[in-house]
Length: 456
Image 1: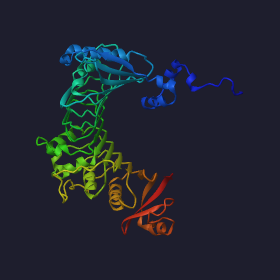
Image 2: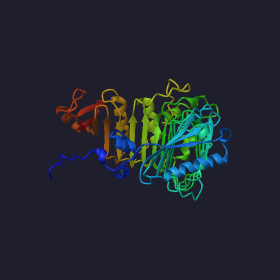
Image 3: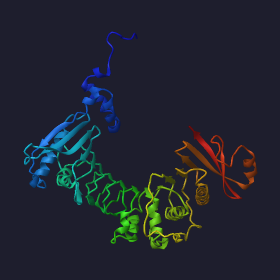
Image 4: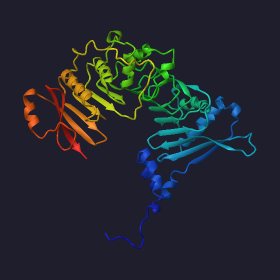
């Protein structure tokens, strides 16, 4: 086909209706990037401006909540098959110039998702009670994902009216709500995922009832977490990075952590901060104190900022509680900050070690190490490899990934009878080259061969 040089087609010539259809097929984060393509694409993201005249003395009234719910439901009902942005502002009637105050910005996605970021200073701490009851609000009925960011004390007064309309809500997340201290959740049977991220002053999370909740993700300060009436919960993440405040809470002790772990005993997938296990160990918690095991746990991800002998021992001790484990991921990331605690002891109290020489991981098939630096973490890494291979009688795959070097290694233990043959080959014992296999030793009789899987 000959090129039409007289009437070239420009990206700016695409009709708006077609542009809406295009972005409706793209995930929200990627769709937002289309704003840089041209002025016509930027036009798609022009916010709807809404101004409310509300008496701030009545900001917590039921009427205010209903008005807020009406604005959001009307917004969700616009441009059903496209993304849309809403800027909601207050007009301060007491101000001579009628000054505008931005209250929130909302982004509606095509996959029945709504992201709300609140604006304004929050000087007071507050609690949030979330109830997701049955309702028949047609405009809010179809919403499946609600993401709330930076909730303020003033915004909190509107939220009960909003929550009452989300009958089909499947995912609820709270992020960077710094004034939020206490959360109570009572959900209907449609909620499947609950997420809390980086709420700095959080002190308590209480899930009172969520009959079909399947996934719970918490990232932030170690707080008191209670999970009740969550029979379908199967995937939990407790990412406790960069946290120190709990050690100052006199009302909190290790029994709360043990109680939390007990409430997770039936989950199938668990991501756990290594710091939590270390924290328990330093308080003298032994296996005899735990009257349960994680009998249904199939996949465990252990995350921390480093690996040393203390962290290794606490991890291995925890593994004695996971008889059905199939997949184990051990992830090291220096970006996760160390968590100093005045209660940590310099000398390691050797607890949780009663069964370290007798337990077996009969179902463990795969072990993956992420973030280890070959040449620096060799001894701890190799000792952990050796122990896992001894306890995992059916293991099929063990590998080490080095993201910084874009390398992955397949791990194999070398039998004593093959050691001379391996040493005489091209396998190296130093980290000078990335093209050949690497030989690591735990002792004179225990060697591991690391073979590159890929090199980019």
